[in-house]
Image (cartoon, rainbow, N blue to C red; front, side, top):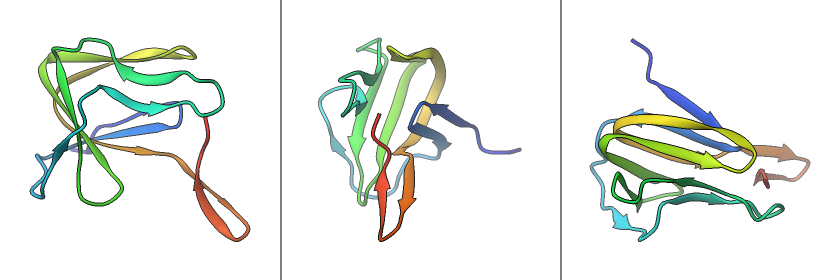
Length: 103
């Protein structure tokens, strides 16, 4: 069975097993800020999940409730079932660099 992937604008989430490396609580549920628009990809229910920085460039979202809702002002909400997710931003290639897409 394929691993579930979710795309929410320039944010990607991949269902994963619990990470084995050290995790550091972030203290909020904003997955990404929009540098251009000021909008943010965030989990609506503050009691439903926890966000962590892992080793390397990824963050991990742990949905501890039956579900959590990922929202953004310009995208339809996504309902994420309970579990662990690796979170990363879309990147783009430009001559001479690979950079994170600005939302």
